[in-house]
Length: 428
Image (cartoon, rainbow, N blue to C red; front, side, top):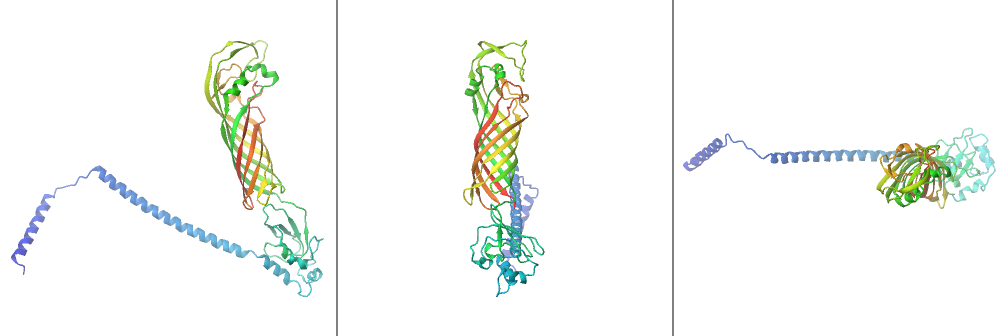
Protein backbone atom coordinates (compact mmCIF):
# COMPACT_ATOMS: atom_id res chain seq x y z
CA UNK A 1 0.00 0.00 0.00
CA UNK A 2 1.42 3.32 -1.06
CA UNK A 3 1.80 6.04 1.52
CA UNK A 4 0.24 9.47 1.30
CA UNK A 5 3.36 11.28 0.04
CA UNK A 6 3.79 8.91 -2.91
CA UNK A 7 0.16 9.31 -4.02
CA UNK A 8 0.48 13.09 -3.81
CA UNK A 9 3.64 13.11 -6.03
CA UNK A 10 1.97 10.92 -8.66
CA UNK A 11 -1.10 13.17 -8.76
CA UNK A 12 1.15 16.21 -9.17
CA UNK A 13 3.00 14.59 -12.15
CA UNK A 14 -0.29 13.77 -13.86
CA UNK A 15 -1.45 17.33 -13.38
CA UNK A 16 1.75 18.73 -14.96
CA UNK A 17 1.52 16.33 -17.93
CA UNK A 18 -2.05 17.34 -18.60
CA UNK A 19 -1.17 21.00 -18.34
CA UNK A 20 1.75 20.67 -20.81
CA UNK A 21 -0.43 18.70 -23.23
CA UNK A 22 -3.06 21.42 -23.18
CA UNK A 23 -0.44 24.16 -23.69
CA UNK A 24 1.14 22.49 -26.80
CA UNK A 25 -2.10 21.06 -28.23
CA UNK A 26 -2.33 23.59 -31.07
CA UNK A 27 1.40 24.19 -31.44
CA UNK A 28 2.89 23.61 -34.93
CA UNK A 29 6.65 24.00 -35.43
CA UNK A 30 7.64 26.29 -38.26
CA UNK A 31 11.37 25.76 -39.05
CA UNK A 32 13.34 27.95 -41.40
CA UNK A 33 13.30 26.92 -45.13
CA UNK A 34 17.09 26.71 -45.11
CA UNK A 35 16.88 24.02 -42.42
CA UNK A 36 14.69 21.81 -44.63
CA UNK A 37 17.04 22.39 -47.58
CA UNK A 38 20.07 21.37 -45.54
CA UNK A 39 18.29 18.24 -44.30
CA UNK A 40 17.21 17.36 -47.84
CA UNK A 41 20.74 17.89 -49.16
CA UNK A 42 22.14 15.70 -46.40
CA UNK A 43 19.73 12.90 -47.23
CA UNK A 44 20.58 13.20 -50.94
CA UNK A 45 24.28 12.99 -50.21
CA UNK A 46 23.76 10.00 -48.01
CA UNK A 47 21.68 8.28 -50.67
CA UNK A 48 24.25 9.04 -53.37
CA UNK A 49 27.05 7.82 -51.12
CA UNK A 50 25.20 4.55 -50.56
CA UNK A 51 24.64 4.15 -54.32
CA UNK A 52 28.28 4.99 -54.98
CA UNK A 53 29.44 2.28 -52.54
CA UNK A 54 27.17 -0.28 -54.19
CA UNK A 55 28.41 0.67 -57.66
CA UNK A 56 32.03 0.18 -56.62
CA UNK A 57 31.17 -3.10 -54.94
CA UNK A 58 29.51 -4.41 -58.11
CA UNK A 59 32.44 -3.16 -60.24
CA UNK A 60 34.92 -4.93 -57.95
CA UNK A 61 33.02 -8.19 -58.19
CA UNK A 62 32.88 -7.95 -61.99
CA UNK A 63 36.60 -7.18 -62.12
CA UNK A 64 37.40 -10.24 -60.02
CA UNK A 65 35.20 -12.42 -62.25
CA UNK A 66 36.86 -11.13 -65.44
CA UNK A 67 40.36 -11.54 -63.97
CA UNK A 68 39.57 -15.10 -62.90
CA UNK A 69 38.16 -15.96 -66.32
CA UNK A 70 41.23 -14.54 -68.08
CA UNK A 71 43.55 -16.46 -65.75
CA UNK A 72 41.64 -19.69 -66.37
CA UNK A 73 41.66 -19.09 -70.14
CA UNK A 74 45.40 -18.47 -70.07
CA UNK A 75 45.97 -21.70 -68.15
CA UNK A 76 43.88 -23.64 -70.69
CA UNK A 77 45.70 -22.02 -73.64
CA UNK A 78 49.13 -22.80 -72.19
CA UNK A 79 48.24 -26.41 -71.46
CA UNK A 80 46.86 -26.93 -74.99
CA UNK A 81 50.22 -26.12 -76.69
CA UNK A 82 52.64 -29.03 -76.95
CA UNK A 83 56.15 -28.33 -75.75
CA UNK A 84 59.25 -28.77 -77.96
CA UNK A 85 60.37 -31.58 -75.67
CA UNK A 86 57.19 -33.54 -76.45
CA UNK A 87 57.80 -33.20 -80.19
CA UNK A 88 61.39 -34.40 -79.79
CA UNK A 89 60.22 -37.42 -77.79
CA UNK A 90 57.66 -38.22 -80.49
CA UNK A 91 60.43 -38.18 -83.09
CA UNK A 92 62.64 -40.41 -80.94
CA UNK A 93 59.87 -43.00 -80.39
CA UNK A 94 59.71 -43.74 -84.13
CA UNK A 95 63.44 -44.57 -84.32
CA UNK A 96 65.16 -47.80 -83.14
CA UNK A 97 67.60 -47.13 -80.29
CA UNK A 98 70.34 -49.19 -81.93
CA UNK A 99 70.15 -47.56 -85.36
CA UNK A 100 69.82 -43.82 -85.85
CA UNK A 101 70.67 -43.46 -89.50
CA UNK A 102 68.20 -41.71 -91.84
CA UNK A 103 67.67 -45.02 -93.71
CA UNK A 104 66.60 -46.85 -90.56
CA UNK A 105 64.39 -43.96 -89.59
CA UNK A 106 62.77 -44.00 -93.01
CA UNK A 107 62.12 -47.74 -92.83
CA UNK A 108 60.59 -47.55 -89.33
CA UNK A 109 58.60 -44.39 -89.79
CA UNK A 110 54.84 -44.51 -90.05
CA UNK A 111 54.94 -42.26 -93.09
CA UNK A 112 55.65 -43.33 -96.66
CA UNK A 113 59.03 -42.39 -98.04
CA UNK A 114 59.78 -39.05 -96.39
CA UNK A 115 62.07 -37.13 -98.71
CA UNK A 116 65.39 -35.58 -97.75
CA UNK A 117 66.92 -32.49 -99.21
CA UNK A 118 70.51 -31.36 -99.44
CA UNK A 119 71.61 -30.25 -96.04
CA UNK A 120 73.52 -27.34 -94.69
CA UNK A 121 73.41 -28.71 -91.12
CA UNK A 122 75.51 -31.48 -89.48
CA UNK A 123 74.42 -35.08 -89.24
CA UNK A 124 70.94 -35.20 -87.62
CA UNK A 125 72.27 -37.53 -84.91
CA UNK A 126 74.41 -34.68 -83.62
CA UNK A 127 71.59 -32.15 -83.85
CA UNK A 128 70.99 -32.07 -80.08
CA UNK A 129 74.54 -30.73 -79.64
CA UNK A 130 73.89 -27.70 -81.82
CA UNK A 131 73.39 -24.36 -80.14
CA UNK A 132 69.88 -23.06 -80.64
CA UNK A 133 69.90 -20.11 -83.07
CA UNK A 134 67.92 -16.93 -82.68
CA UNK A 135 64.16 -17.35 -83.08
CA UNK A 136 63.31 -18.35 -86.64
CA UNK A 137 60.30 -19.29 -88.71
CA UNK A 138 59.83 -22.99 -89.51
CA UNK A 139 57.59 -24.34 -92.24
CA UNK A 140 56.78 -28.05 -92.23
CA UNK A 141 55.70 -29.42 -95.62
CA UNK A 142 52.13 -30.65 -95.90
CA UNK A 143 52.92 -33.94 -97.65
CA UNK A 144 50.94 -37.14 -97.29
CA UNK A 145 50.04 -37.44 -93.63
CA UNK A 146 51.95 -34.36 -92.60
CA UNK A 147 50.32 -31.40 -90.91
CA UNK A 148 51.84 -27.97 -91.64
CA UNK A 149 53.07 -25.90 -88.73
CA UNK A 150 54.23 -22.29 -88.95
CA UNK A 151 55.91 -20.77 -85.93
CA UNK A 152 56.97 -17.13 -85.97
CA UNK A 153 59.03 -16.11 -82.96
CA UNK A 154 61.31 -13.50 -84.48
CA UNK A 155 59.98 -9.90 -84.39
CA UNK A 156 61.60 -9.24 -87.75
CA UNK A 157 60.83 -12.66 -89.30
CA UNK A 158 64.30 -13.03 -90.77
CA UNK A 159 64.57 -16.76 -91.42
CA UNK A 160 62.42 -19.40 -93.07
CA UNK A 161 63.26 -23.14 -92.97
CA UNK A 162 61.63 -26.17 -94.54
CA UNK A 163 61.50 -29.63 -92.99
CA UNK A 164 60.45 -32.86 -94.67
CA UNK A 165 59.94 -36.28 -93.11
CA UNK A 166 59.13 -34.90 -89.68
CA UNK A 167 56.96 -36.80 -87.24
CA UNK A 168 53.21 -36.49 -87.45
CA UNK A 169 51.96 -33.36 -85.65
CA UNK A 170 48.42 -33.28 -84.35
CA UNK A 171 48.74 -29.64 -83.35
CA UNK A 172 50.93 -26.67 -84.15
CA UNK A 173 53.88 -26.56 -81.76
CA UNK A 174 57.17 -24.62 -81.55
CA UNK A 175 60.24 -26.56 -82.72
CA UNK A 176 63.75 -25.60 -81.66
CA UNK A 177 66.59 -26.08 -84.12
CA UNK A 178 68.46 -28.42 -81.78
CA UNK A 179 65.48 -30.80 -81.59
CA UNK A 180 64.92 -31.45 -85.30
CA UNK A 181 65.04 -35.17 -86.19
CA UNK A 182 65.73 -34.76 -89.89
CA UNK A 183 68.00 -32.70 -92.08
CA UNK A 184 67.16 -29.05 -92.74
CA UNK A 185 67.40 -27.01 -95.93
CA UNK A 186 67.75 -23.32 -95.21
CA UNK A 187 66.09 -21.10 -97.77
CA UNK A 188 67.18 -17.63 -98.74
CA UNK A 189 66.09 -14.91 -96.37
CA UNK A 190 62.52 -13.89 -97.02
CA UNK A 191 59.70 -12.26 -95.12
CA UNK A 192 56.03 -12.73 -95.70
CA UNK A 193 54.08 -9.47 -95.96
CA UNK A 194 52.92 -8.10 -92.63
CA UNK A 195 50.36 -5.46 -91.81
CA UNK A 196 50.91 -2.79 -89.19
CA UNK A 197 48.74 0.05 -87.91
CA UNK A 198 50.59 3.30 -87.21
CA UNK A 199 49.27 6.34 -85.36
CA UNK A 200 51.28 9.53 -85.13
CA UNK A 201 51.24 13.21 -84.24
CA UNK A 202 53.40 16.08 -85.55
CA UNK A 203 54.49 19.27 -83.84
CA UNK A 204 55.54 21.49 -86.74
CA UNK A 205 56.48 25.03 -87.59
CA UNK A 206 54.45 26.16 -90.60
CA UNK A 207 54.46 29.00 -93.08
CA UNK A 208 53.92 30.03 -96.70
CA UNK A 209 56.27 30.64 -99.61
CA UNK A 210 55.29 33.08 -102.39
CA UNK A 211 56.36 33.23 -106.01
CA UNK A 212 55.09 34.34 -109.40
CA UNK A 213 55.86 33.14 -112.90
CA UNK A 214 57.66 35.47 -115.29
CA UNK A 215 54.65 36.03 -117.56
CA UNK A 216 52.39 36.92 -114.58
CA UNK A 217 54.88 38.92 -112.49
CA UNK A 218 53.59 42.22 -113.98
CA UNK A 219 50.29 41.64 -112.13
CA UNK A 220 52.02 41.69 -108.72
CA UNK A 221 53.15 44.85 -106.93
CA UNK A 222 56.94 45.27 -107.10
CA UNK A 223 57.29 45.44 -103.29
CA UNK A 224 54.73 42.77 -102.38
CA UNK A 225 57.20 39.95 -101.67
CA UNK A 226 59.34 42.19 -99.44
CA UNK A 227 56.34 43.25 -97.37
CA UNK A 228 55.17 39.65 -96.99
CA UNK A 229 58.66 38.60 -95.92
CA UNK A 230 58.73 41.29 -93.23
CA UNK A 231 55.13 41.04 -92.04
CA UNK A 232 54.24 37.33 -92.06
CA UNK A 233 55.16 34.93 -89.26
CA UNK A 234 54.97 31.15 -89.10
CA UNK A 235 53.06 29.59 -86.24
CA UNK A 236 53.24 26.15 -84.69
CA UNK A 237 50.62 23.68 -85.88
CA UNK A 238 49.66 20.07 -85.26
CA UNK A 239 49.06 17.12 -87.51
CA UNK A 240 47.39 13.80 -86.65
CA UNK A 241 47.60 10.71 -88.84
CA UNK A 242 46.51 7.08 -88.88
CA UNK A 243 48.07 4.72 -91.43
CA UNK A 244 48.23 1.11 -92.46
CA UNK A 245 51.70 -0.22 -93.30
CA UNK A 246 52.38 -3.32 -95.39
CA UNK A 247 55.89 -4.73 -94.91
CA UNK A 248 57.02 -6.21 -98.22
CA UNK A 249 60.48 -7.32 -97.13
CA UNK A 250 62.54 -7.12 -93.98
CA UNK A 251 63.63 -3.55 -94.76
CA UNK A 252 60.95 -2.10 -97.02
CA UNK A 253 57.27 -1.29 -96.61
CA UNK A 254 54.51 0.79 -98.17
CA UNK A 255 52.14 3.06 -96.28
CA UNK A 256 48.63 4.39 -96.87
CA UNK A 257 46.73 6.52 -94.38
CA UNK A 258 44.64 9.56 -93.55
CA UNK A 259 45.72 12.71 -91.73
CA UNK A 260 44.43 16.06 -90.53
CA UNK A 261 46.64 19.13 -90.31
CA UNK A 262 46.34 22.86 -89.68
CA UNK A 263 48.85 25.38 -90.99
CA UNK A 264 48.53 28.81 -89.37
CA UNK A 265 50.17 32.07 -90.30
CA UNK A 266 50.02 35.51 -88.70
CA UNK A 267 50.39 38.77 -90.61
CA UNK A 268 51.27 42.14 -89.09
CA UNK A 269 51.63 45.17 -91.36
CA UNK A 270 52.32 48.84 -90.75
CA UNK A 271 53.60 50.60 -93.86
CA UNK A 272 52.79 53.01 -96.66
CA UNK A 273 53.75 52.33 -100.28
CA UNK A 274 53.13 53.54 -103.83
CA UNK A 275 49.87 52.88 -105.65
CA UNK A 276 49.99 50.83 -108.87
CA UNK A 277 48.40 52.02 -112.14
CA UNK A 278 46.78 49.52 -114.53
CA UNK A 279 45.27 49.72 -117.99
CA UNK A 280 42.28 47.58 -118.94
CA UNK A 281 41.94 47.97 -122.74
CA UNK A 282 43.93 45.39 -124.67
CA UNK A 283 44.96 43.40 -121.60
CA UNK A 284 43.72 40.16 -120.11
CA UNK A 285 43.05 39.78 -116.37
CA UNK A 286 44.48 36.97 -114.30
CA UNK A 287 42.33 34.45 -112.44
CA UNK A 288 41.58 36.93 -109.62
CA UNK A 289 40.57 39.71 -112.02
CA UNK A 290 43.68 41.91 -111.88
CA UNK A 291 45.20 43.64 -114.91
CA UNK A 292 48.91 44.24 -115.58
CA UNK A 293 50.67 47.09 -113.76
CA UNK A 294 52.37 49.56 -116.10
CA UNK A 295 53.50 52.16 -113.54
CA UNK A 296 53.17 53.59 -110.02
CA UNK A 297 51.67 56.84 -108.76
CA UNK A 298 52.11 58.60 -105.42
CA UNK A 299 51.94 57.05 -101.97
CA UNK A 300 48.79 55.24 -101.02
CA UNK A 301 47.05 55.12 -97.63
CA UNK A 302 48.65 53.69 -94.50
CA UNK A 303 48.32 49.88 -94.27
CA UNK A 304 48.11 48.72 -90.67
CA UNK A 305 46.47 45.50 -89.45
CA UNK A 306 47.09 42.26 -87.59
CA UNK A 307 45.43 39.01 -88.68
CA UNK A 308 45.76 35.24 -88.49
CA UNK A 309 44.77 32.71 -91.14
CA UNK A 310 44.22 28.97 -90.67
CA UNK A 311 44.62 26.52 -93.53
CA UNK A 312 43.03 23.15 -92.70
CA UNK A 313 43.84 20.04 -94.68
CA UNK A 314 42.49 16.51 -94.73
CA UNK A 315 45.23 14.42 -96.34
CA UNK A 316 45.68 10.95 -97.78
CA UNK A 317 49.42 10.17 -97.55
CA UNK A 318 50.90 7.17 -99.35
CA UNK A 319 54.44 6.09 -100.11
CA UNK A 320 57.52 4.27 -98.85
CA UNK A 321 58.80 3.49 -95.33
CA UNK A 322 62.13 1.81 -94.58
CA UNK A 323 63.25 -0.27 -91.57
CA UNK A 324 67.02 -0.66 -91.26
CA UNK A 325 68.03 -2.31 -87.95
CA UNK A 326 70.71 -0.76 -85.79
CA UNK A 327 70.26 -3.48 -83.18
CA UNK A 328 67.63 -6.00 -82.23
CA UNK A 329 65.40 -3.25 -80.81
CA UNK A 330 66.33 -0.08 -82.73
CA UNK A 331 65.90 0.71 -86.42
CA UNK A 332 66.37 3.73 -88.67
CA UNK A 333 63.07 4.51 -90.38
CA UNK A 334 63.19 6.83 -93.40
CA UNK A 335 59.91 7.86 -94.97
CA UNK A 336 58.97 9.39 -98.33
CA UNK A 337 55.28 10.15 -98.92
CA UNK A 338 53.04 11.89 -101.42
CA UNK A 339 49.91 13.53 -100.03
CA UNK A 340 46.60 14.41 -101.63
CA UNK A 341 45.19 17.30 -99.56
CA UNK A 342 41.68 18.70 -99.41
CA UNK A 343 42.22 22.37 -98.53
CA UNK A 344 39.89 24.70 -96.63
CA UNK A 345 40.69 28.26 -95.50
CA UNK A 346 39.25 30.26 -92.62
CA UNK A 347 37.18 32.92 -94.36
CA UNK A 348 37.03 36.46 -93.05
CA UNK A 349 40.70 36.65 -92.10
CA UNK A 350 42.59 39.66 -93.47
CA UNK A 351 45.54 39.52 -95.83
CA UNK A 352 47.57 41.80 -98.09
CA UNK A 353 46.33 42.35 -101.63
CA UNK A 354 49.15 41.33 -103.97
CA UNK A 355 48.48 44.14 -106.47
CA UNK A 356 47.19 47.16 -104.55
CA UNK A 357 49.04 46.41 -101.26
CA UNK A 358 45.82 47.18 -99.37
CA UNK A 359 44.10 45.17 -96.71
CA UNK A 360 41.68 42.63 -98.18
CA UNK A 361 39.50 39.79 -96.90
CA UNK A 362 40.69 36.23 -97.36
CA UNK A 363 38.27 34.45 -99.69
CA UNK A 364 37.92 30.67 -99.99
CA UNK A 365 37.05 31.04 -103.70
CA UNK A 366 40.65 32.14 -104.37
CA UNK A 367 42.03 28.75 -103.33
CA UNK A 368 42.12 25.33 -104.92
CA UNK A 369 40.09 22.57 -103.33
CA UNK A 370 42.65 19.81 -103.95
CA UNK A 371 46.40 20.26 -103.76
CA UNK A 372 49.32 17.82 -103.79
CA UNK A 373 52.08 17.73 -101.23
CA UNK A 374 55.21 15.76 -100.32
CA UNK A 375 56.66 14.65 -97.01
CA UNK A 376 60.13 13.33 -96.19
CA UNK A 377 61.17 12.16 -92.74
CA UNK A 378 63.86 10.15 -91.01
CA UNK A 379 64.08 8.91 -87.45
CA UNK A 380 64.58 6.02 -85.05
CA UNK A 381 62.07 3.39 -84.02
CA UNK A 382 62.28 1.20 -80.92
CA UNK A 383 60.55 -2.16 -81.00
CA UNK A 384 59.08 -2.92 -77.58
CA UNK A 385 58.10 -6.48 -78.50
CA UNK A 386 56.82 -8.38 -81.51
CA UNK A 387 53.60 -6.34 -81.78
CA UNK A 388 54.42 -2.86 -80.47
CA UNK A 389 56.92 -0.15 -81.39
CA UNK A 390 57.38 3.59 -80.84
CA UNK A 391 59.49 6.08 -82.74
CA UNK A 392 60.46 9.67 -83.50
CA UNK A 393 61.07 11.28 -86.91
CA UNK A 394 62.24 14.66 -88.11
CA UNK A 395 59.97 15.66 -90.98
CA UNK A 396 59.76 18.29 -93.72
CA UNK A 397 56.63 18.88 -95.78
CA UNK A 398 55.78 21.13 -98.69
CA UNK A 399 52.91 21.68 -101.09
CA UNK A 400 53.76 20.78 -104.66
CA UNK A 401 50.64 22.47 -106.04
CA UNK A 402 50.12 26.25 -105.68
CA UNK A 403 47.33 27.10 -103.24
CA UNK A 404 45.67 29.78 -105.40
CA UNK A 405 43.46 28.80 -108.32
CA UNK A 406 45.12 28.29 -111.74
CA UNK A 407 46.24 31.37 -113.67
CA UNK A 408 46.42 33.51 -110.52
CA UNK A 409 49.45 35.80 -110.64
CA UNK A 410 50.47 34.79 -107.12
CA UNK A 411 51.37 31.18 -106.30
CA UNK A 412 51.68 30.56 -102.53
CA UNK A 413 52.81 27.16 -101.26
CA UNK A 414 52.67 25.92 -97.67
CA UNK A 415 55.57 24.27 -95.85
CA UNK A 416 56.32 22.85 -92.42
CA UNK A 417 59.27 21.53 -90.42
CA UNK A 418 59.05 19.63 -87.17
CA UNK A 419 59.17 16.49 -85.10
CA UNK A 420 56.72 13.60 -85.29
CA UNK A 421 56.11 10.78 -82.82
CA UNK A 422 54.38 7.53 -83.75
CA UNK A 423 53.20 4.23 -82.34
CA UNK A 424 52.87 1.11 -84.49
CA UNK A 425 51.04 -2.13 -83.82
CA UNK A 426 51.96 -5.20 -85.85
CA UNK A 427 48.90 -7.34 -86.61
CA UNK A 428 49.68 -10.98 -85.80
